[in-house]
Length: 297
Ligand code: KIV
Image (cartoon, rainbow, N blue to C red):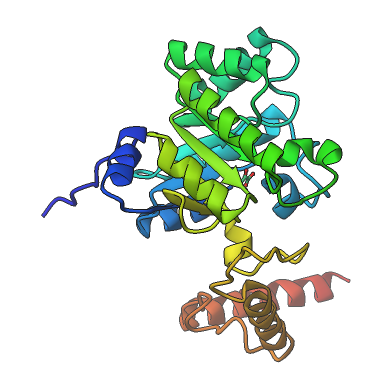
């Protein structure tokens, strides 16, 4: 029987899920193998987040990652994901210098990286203009409000946003503006539960929450946080489903012990022994050759 492939998830699938009141899952993915596993597990949306600057490359924040570095990972993830909708995160300064440069950089994620959408943070007049142009070109755009890590220097760190009346009203108005400009989904990061739920009910497009409570239409988590691999910090909103750091260290220590005891590799099952007669012949000919050298001396 030929294997039937699930149809590709699109922004329209997420829209239908929202209408049906069915929350969907999004996880970050940065490499082919992880993307393949998450895709096979049926995760609807994969985000090649610029969080990879921290979790994968060890930077203290997301500010120093470039378009070329992000593209490297986007290409790997899109190869591994046959069903999931893949969003590429446009990195810091890739869409802030000019409208033209923003369009060109975002287009690279579609054209070269084969992503299905790009995510950009914030809601300035320039961002709104960029969203409109990208959508007009045919590039689906995901917005990102609340804690926008690319603005962490001016926000003063990774802190809850929209917690006062004034900042909450600003966020609600920005969400409306982004939706009007044409974003097809909106990430809400680290905002109070009530505000994320309110925005989700006001908008017809799906919201994707992180640290924003369960009233959003979907949830996103950084994969290394979920698997308990990233040891930088442990935000309150992350639920660890596996202690990856401990499991990884246990596995590599077991391997090291096996190497030290010569228990790895097993010569029969994890290596290839030679045919006994051939090996005997090797030894015989070696002995002869060495004997001849002796005589010549
Ligand atoms: O870069 C990222 O992983 C993100 C998510 C945390 C939303 O932007």
